Image (cartoon, rainbow, N blue to C red; front, side):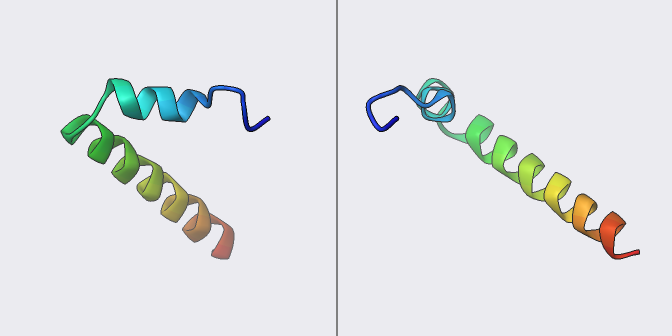
Length: 40
């Protein structure tokens, strides 16, 4: 598994900078929304 190429690593290499930051923020927002929906 360690030798296999990670799609996320490829994505990070292809889209450095603002695009990577926006993707990370979107993932965090989605995670927060899921947590909020579960706690209600």
